[in-house]
Image (cartoon, rainbow, N blue to C red; front, side):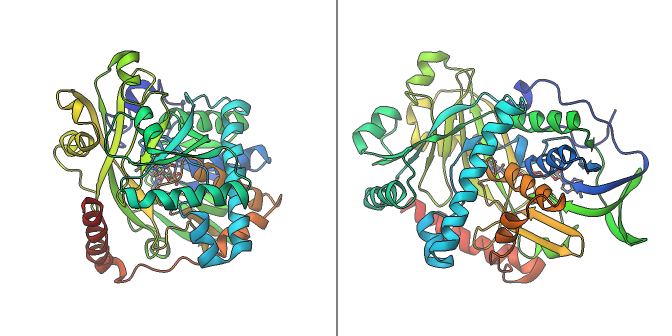
Length: 429
Ligand SMILES: Cc1cc2nc3c(=O)[nH]c(=O)nc-3n(C[C@H](O)[C@H](O)[C@H](O)COP(=O)(O)OP(=O)(O)OC[C@H]3O[C@@H](n4cnc5c(N)ncnc54)[C@H](O)[C@@H]3O)c2cc1C
């Protein structure tokens, strides 16, 4: 029996079925690549490296899919965390277009995982992004026109106030956009699916095996765990918001933020459709985003609220409930069956941190709350580069500017809290 942290008591853990069979690392192992972190990014890196014929050992400190990958909203977005207008302004039209192509490839890659690799995860198509202020609606309309014309993204369309309110039983929203390439899925089933495919391809996956340090040995990296070590030519760090200072070069640019989810009692099919008529994923324009959807067993899964500490509040369900009732006051009497938190990993400008942090050690993280589609694909890009298949897309990502958080290791928290609190306050005005 492993002493490592168990899965949180989430709706995902209650409905995912048993995790893939894998044992902790014991003794010494060698590999071409050692991957640290068993979320979407690490598992997918392991899958693609193994498919390319490389020897790969993955270390996960807790359980496979235990981190953000097994706890998130399950919302499938098409695009980067920043919209194309922002990317064009800040990085130029050519880089913005290249990032858009990477985002589309990432979306195709998710389909490949689901249908080509058997990562069945209850995918439901449709993602509706809604505006919580009337003044934002004109920008949304302009954004949809730009995406349709300049990016030829035809699955996206503008949705007016009447249609939004017919789709979502809330008076909070004034317009939005619907993308039928988006959708939602069962987050932990996706992680399990990638893990099973990686095991099937020959990757060695070890839960309950924290990497505790790295040292050079005979020109290779020696990665320590409490019960053994891995000697590898290369290391991929995919620890996201759970690294807790293991790699200071990552920590300077990637900050963990806690985000909360609650899941209600089941309402039956008609009750669920009375909340979100067609069952798509919904997220809104708040700075601290509200995101929600109904589940296969007809509950409402609602995400909202965040804080800047690993310590979980005593009553997560109660905390999220307050947010949920702002959108769905008709649920005042609904029971909350599950509440949990997960750590996002954000960067100062919300661009991902793909970087060689030491010779032979590559980090992929900082998806800034949008990793369901991107994290598995970034794993593939790292694997492709390490297996010498193709490093062009990875180079493009590695060249993205990601500044350090101001304030250094300790002061960055209060600095960020002040900034985030200001924006969260603006959501309410
Ligand atoms: C509450 C919440 C809601 C979200 N909702 C959405 C959403 O709806 N849509 C979306 O696109 N994205 C969403 N995200 C973001 C998305 O979940 C992440 O971007 C994605 O899962 C990142 O995957 P990852 O593999 O990089 O990290 P993780 O899944 O966090 O995996 C990192 C793993 O590394 C392990 N680890 C860390 N340090 C060590 C070590 N020293 N040794 C061994 N293992 C280690 C951790 O235990 C963890 O399992 C959400 C995130 C959260 C927290």
